[in-house]
Image 1 (cartoon, one colour):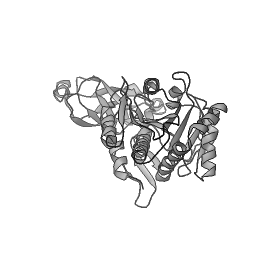
Image 2 (spheres, helix red, strand yellow; image 1 turned 60 degrees about the vertical axis):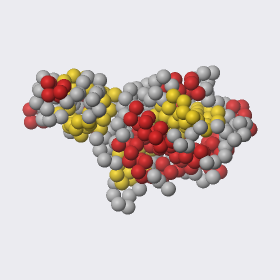
Image 3 (tube, helix red, strand yellow; image 1 turned 135 degrees about the vertical axis):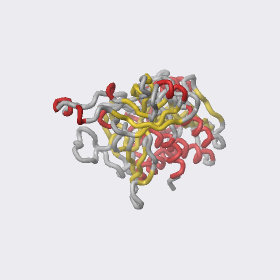
Image 4 (tube, one colour; image 1 turned 90 degrees about the vertical axis):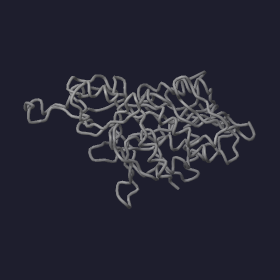
Length: 361
């Protein structure tokens, strides 16, 4: 059964790349009674360790990422407006006229809205062009730079989108939130930890989340080098293609049709043996899945597979509409089926399965 409260807490927590500590502490709070130990790398990626009951299976690493796309305070104008830099990939068209929150250096949170020149003063030619990101600012209702500084806001402070997580309509399976990318993966990791805390397994499990995925898969590099897994999975999100205007070449997945198994993306071609093992489990056990190509992006599996001496890796992702915006949407069945699939993988990935995977690379 879906834990709605957990999803609300995770998505409404604030944590852009380089500022993930609020989300990391929430993850630790939810899992500390269910792990044998925590391991944390120097950048802040955190994993719960669950030792095997037999010590015969491979060391499995399954990681989401804590960070969401957001912004950082760059400059405070003399009039009290905030200029910012983007943290992660944003398209300027979805940034305008949105609500945001600034977590000030003193720990206080301030509400703001993104603004720009109104269309009334733009030339006809300028109205045809996308707004440049550097021309967008944040209005926090201040009247001077001095007032903003008195509030404790400084360059480098984190800015996150603001939206309340909710079911889109009372009977709808669609869930709306600001940071499904990738708090839904963090939720999967938490649910797996709670399950395997009480369940016997043959693997040494490291289940957790990385930092700084949105700015170059950075935390995954250091985390994998720390853990040294035999096999690794990225628990992430992928683009849905079931909205008007999308073509199969741009995105080939639909909400509600199951987790995506990434067969190709810009960061990695997955290990053939591991890919075939997972797809075989889906077909044998009637788990819906969607083989997916994402030509313009990547996941932490792109760093996992190049760590140490090379690690067979695969990305299993929840399809999302409107990625990298304030208002992303998922289908609850894709989330629950991702958890089911990961349990199935871990339960079946014993020593003999690992050997078959390696030999089929």
